[in-house]
Amino acid sequence: MGVTAMLALPLLLLGISGLLFIYQEVSRLWSKSAVQNKVMVITDAISGLGKECARVFHTGGARLVLCGKSWERLQSLYDALISVADPSKQTFTPKLVLLDLSDISCVQDVAKEVLDCYGCVDILINNASVKVKGPAHKISLELDKKIMDANYFGPITLTKALLPNMISRRTGQIVLVNNLQGKLGIPFRTAYAASKHAALGFFDCLRAEVEEYDVVVSTVSPTFIRSYHVPPSQGNREASVWKFFFRKLTYGVHPVDVAEEVMRTVRRKKQEVFMANPIPKAAVYIRTFFPEFFFAVVACGVKEKLSVPEEG
Image (cartoon, rainbow, N blue to C red; front, side, top):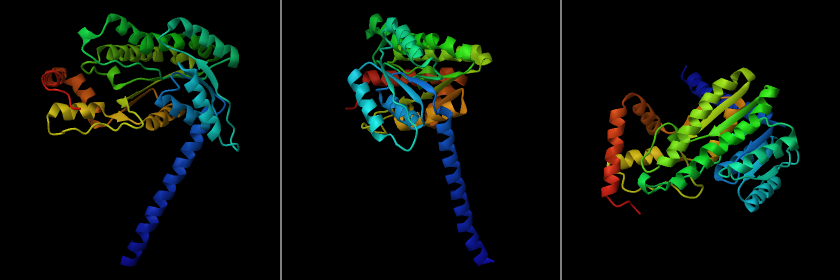
């Protein structure tokens, strides 16, 4: 009996490993088939997340339209994608488009250019984002407007320009890459949080409006998308409960992980994804069900931040 049990355990582990491997391979193939030959627009493709999304979807066989503010960086991304393309698999040459979403006047022309070229857009990835940090009274109204243009008016203008094509074809998917601050505000990021709340509200409403046309609206909200090379500061974790809480709240997600989640969101047509460790998730629930406690904790953090010099 003992020998049988000893043999059964390795066989069980081997069987589980085999099933996991099969599941991963099927998921990978399914992911690729979901975007194969689809026309996909990615805004701010030259950002860390934009590059990873371009890599994932280019490998999957999508017809990419890569948008960005710098032609040199777009060309560099183009060269990188072409250089690693597998000749044995069908991939398409990406189209490069100069686009600054904070310049609303050019967005309609870009949408027309893409539709004239491909005739349709199957998937739109709204990825562009501009950040600013500072006390509200020290941020100029001009900068507030710039943040709203880049993070709210730009994405919705592009979405509105491409949406009629999706509705007429009764197919399509719009993905908004948003942020934790679309769900709760963090001090010293008033303009950024306002733009993210506005964007999330718009796409939540749009989701219900276009469901009857079989157009899917998805939102992916990580905490922060961290840099490739800059690890989160460790600091003195014992300094205060607030500092520990704030670091956990703002600890970023790697661009590769977000890009893979965007692929899963497209493949499974998810409506909403919130990428965060347990503490940010708990903060969202506390803000909803115990707002006074949440506000008190945040206010304590602000007072401490104003009275104690920042680390580094």
